[in-house]
Amino acid sequence: MERLFCDPRRCVGCRACEIACAVEHTPSKDLFRSVLNGELGPPRRRVQTVGAEPYRVAIGGVALSLSCHHCDPAPCVDACITGAMHKENGQTLCDTEKCVGCWMCVMSCPYGAITPRVKALKCDLCPDRRGRTGRSRYACVEACPTEALFAGTFEEFQRVLAEPIRAVWEGAQ
Amino acid sequence: MTERYVIIGASAAGSSAAETLRRHAPKAQITVVSDEKITYSKPLLSYYLAGHLGEEQLFFKAPDFYERYGTQRIHARAVGLRPEKSIVELSDGQKLQYDKLLLATGAAPRFPKIEGIRREGVFGLRKLEDAQGILARLPSTKRAVVLGGGLVGLKAAAALKERGLSVTVLVDSPHVLSQMLDESSARIFEKIFEQNGVTIYTKAKPVAVLGTQHIEGVQLASGEVFECDVVVVGKGVDPRLELLEGTPIRKDYGILVDDYLRTSVENIYAAGDVAQARDVLRGEPWINALWPCAVEQGRVAALNMLGRAMSYRGSMRMNSVQFFGVPVISAGLAVLTPGPLGGRPGEHDETLESRPAPGIYRKIFLKDETIVGFVLVGEVPIEAAGVLRILMERRVNVAPIKEELLELGPDLGRVLPLIVEHKERFVEREFQELVQTVGV
Image 1 (tube, rainbow over the protein chains, first blue to last red):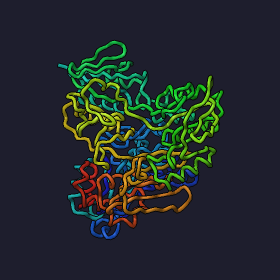
Image 2 (image 1 turned 90 degrees about the vertical axis):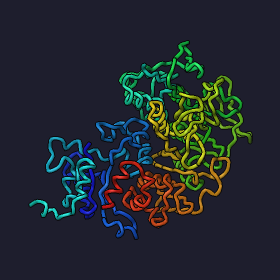
Image 3 (image 1 turned 60 degrees about the horizontal axis):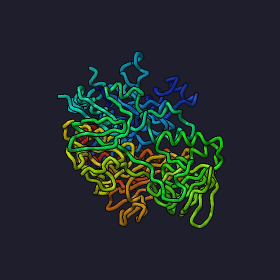
Image 4 (image 1 turned 180 degrees about the horizontal axis):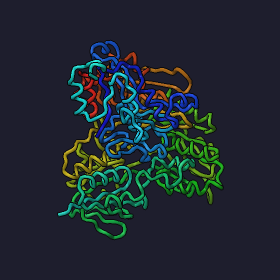
């Protein structure tokens, strides 16, 4: 199954993925309108600083953009008392109609990938972008100006990691 | 020959086991026995009682779940177990032959042994019929007394308050939620309940439920009487062990199971609120009667019944609940007051605490620089619960990030170096991927 990964060598922590994610999850799907209409919610992906001092330097990377790993078995699905959180074709999805906000999933997710805001909010792999995608199927991947975000299998991502990093314009030829 | 799997109990553990069995054994004969006609989510009963959910919203599986999974669901009670013949006897006279049996009989509410406790109008809140019984009485009910200040008691109290009743909670312990919170955290919720018009009496010892035709009140040892028309009991649950009578299956408080969730008798497994299994924090078998644990145990038991050796990692004391819009997540033993309430002395040697604003509270308990418990109150603080919990479960030394622990959000990134350092404890595929990712 296709999942999303972030190359810490490329991520500069600009948070463009966060804003793209938040906008994608509004009715208007437009930054200006969603701010104007007060539609903007929290992003389901977060840019994080890897490590606290003194580790930050030691680890090499500075920032990393993380969201749900769509794991299997998923602790959040086990934890859900309503059946809202479920697996579908390998994806971990939350049916917010069913969610009652008990936050069992928030307690259970070891990656901190679920945001409690009345309903459990998490990465849903952009279902609304089907049929209207641009460069990428996913809003965050499309928004990433340094091409740090990658959609594919982990094996494919490993091949990316094995390559030395080049500037985006160098790879374009 | 087709393998015959029999599961007793159709709630969290039972249905999770049935689903797993079917996924891996398409042709097996799977029979689920339940004394309840439908499968619904027991933790949602308080939402139903409050009027937030209708009956049809209590299903955590599709109504045709058992059909869809090609599973026979029998509405009967298992009344006898003959391990020497591999037979389960049902209340309708049927005898079921099994190759592998899962006991997921769950737990039943614990009623205090006081005068009048079996009177009509005294309810637990464990079954749909309990909630229906309370709702049927609402038109003629003005005042309710809740016995017990635990999770179920307080959820019932909040629900009845929302229904417009005058509600009094009588708590044995010195504070509410004594199985979930330390005293100072519990006081926050006592205040929230009082602000919302629910009266809480701690250190209250009820001795009798009064009334003749109808319930009239609850009397305390002091002689004081709280008048009411309905009584709800929320004093915890006990595992249902009736089926074990006359069998050699080993039990303690619940059914004792090993790390493969096998009982002491061949081909019989146990999962859920009835199973006393590995507890990662206590180091001895324990029952953490929690929905997530029951689902996971059901799945692990099923995999072992299928012959795929799968070790159960163990459960821990944890809980998440929201009262009047204020959420709280707590985990670990250090949170509990040492003594009969379940806490153990010397569980922690340091506490970190912050209360930057009303309704926002964080408290983290440490021992030897390792997290041994935490309480998080408020929508933003609880975001850190999952990450703190995994650090606690994997016993990671958090000294390098101690200064930042109280400010931690859902910041896996901040703790990633610790995970890299202890990568052998984070065997899950997703953690290993992260370790490889930041290792480049």
